[in-house]
Image (cartoon, rainbow, N blue to C red; front, side, top):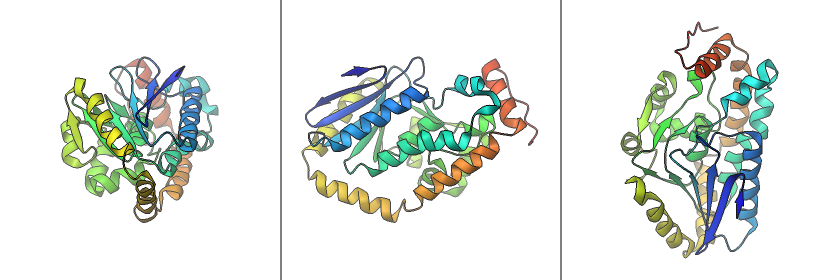
Length: 260
């Protein structure tokens, strides 16, 4: 079934959700709503026993569409925006008691990174890359990255990754545990589908309860962290550095940050 910006396809008990908004699968509000609707439908559908989340083309997702921020100007309420969008997506990905595989087919940045990290298992194509992204435009962590990155990378590596804006290749992501397997670009989707079919044929109720246990023990602070991220993003979104970061991004130049 095709819809604008989100495509779904189901076979062998596996629902594949594909982010598809050219050119870089960046999110706007309608795309977020369609993703949430697809996730909600999959959660209730007993014929869906495993899910795959991936992107179309060469990108997984570049995160928030920056042009939306520019158009909103100073009126964008960052806290409300996050609670309306990415916080809901991350919470839903973790709440669905079915295995969800992130097939990271290309770059994942910003909110795209947070959404990727909220999946249960992440396999990547060789061309995939991972970028925190937020500090590049003078913003703070959101989309659950304040929980997932220190948990996976450790505090020191997570701080380097977030603070200096570096991009991790798929091989670096594998070495640091952001993904568990890396495949040649053209082999990723077939490998993921075969594994997803295997999970779909397994004891998915037991898998779902295990996911619930992981959420309770390892991610018990996620809800509070998402709410706190939204507060901090509201503060960061009012800074001069953020305005400069967005302007520099759109003008394709290096930003001149002042810590203001």
